[in-house]
Length: 424
Image (cartoon, rainbow, N blue to C red):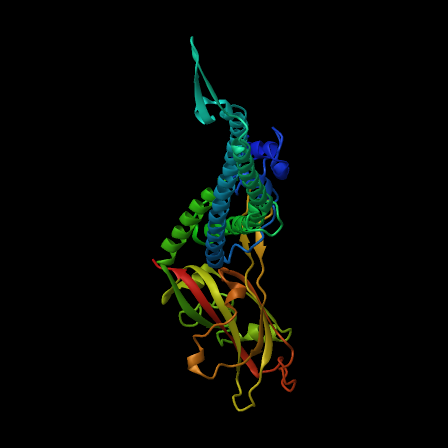
């Protein structure tokens, strides 16, 4: 039994007002008598092997909010420790005061029985001489000691009443002196933030490994002191991410879905420096169904004029390129499905798979160069690898309904990507 609970038990034995503080030996002590993070193993047990609560690809957001929740935990723990100190101090003072009052009560009774009989306290003392010895006589009818005893008992009563009043305040619902209720509320807040921090840490650890090849395993859960371990881990994870971010750059990449060639053989070299995605003939065939499926290889991002190591999407947009600019401006709804991003979670566990689905509500040819660097849909594709199989689907008619997709008006699709990459 810890020292605080032992003090609580003694106080409960000393006064029935504090009987709610008593916990028998061997049972779980009152929460305020223990560190606030006791029970982390029970609290986090269901989350340890559960499926991920948060997407690992949102690494930057996870690290930021992880530290925010840990800071909340630290602040809550500090407040809880202050309550713990006050509760122990008040309980100790109450116990000491009651013991002193009991001693004082015994002392008063002792004085009441013996003080009047002492020679030095005899009223109107007189010395009587005799032939062989002397004797002392005095007035024994005085009420002095009775009055003193009465006043002392009154003082003792007021002190007991004051002690009982302050002790009762510790049990009042909503009272600032109800340290136990205040502590239990803080513990609930603490547990909410600790769960959120742990879930974010699990996802962030997978994201660090999948995106930056940084392996920082989350520490194993302990029943006490786990907050300190998680804080130290979060510091390390944050600094590892910061080291990587020093070498991260971003660029906007444009490419047309077809290279404008017709009748080109399958093995023909790409036009200019850009690896071929599809010819105009292949584009027109796919256009009849409105769905374009193609692959982007690693070479697409590592060619003569473009070397992007470990490319990650930070935004995606699609524009329709018409071959007749005299037609009124048209808009199409376009759906984009980038490659699936898979992350290994653990041996024997199904990999985490994220399938981004981007909706472009009004795709049209970009007329203003100032807008070319603005690439939306960042959150949807954040940290998804552009390498792999893509699917782009365009609706059969324009939004106005007066232009069919399956004709020569739709000459090409221009894809814009905002790419984050690692500097060599």
